[in-house]
Length: 104
Image (tube, rainbow, N blue to C red):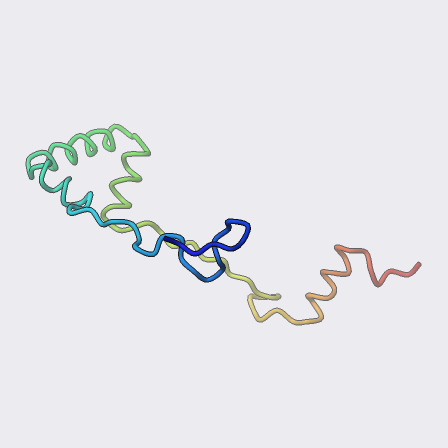
């Protein structure tokens, strides 16, 4: 039984579920592998390919993602000309946004 304080709340740092969740004997992947044959997979891919050839963008996206992986999104930040951000540029931008440094 999990430890509790005088108000019935779990004590900090002590697990409320010390035994943890019981693991299943079979994973979802194993269940799918047992249920779906190679011929089933070929039929599924074939139907997806037919839809992609007809211009279905979702089908095209699915085929590309599964073949090449999802594209990685990067955010490139930089100063003028792609160089490093200068502290002065950053401060000027803040001044413009928040209206500080103006003559009053």
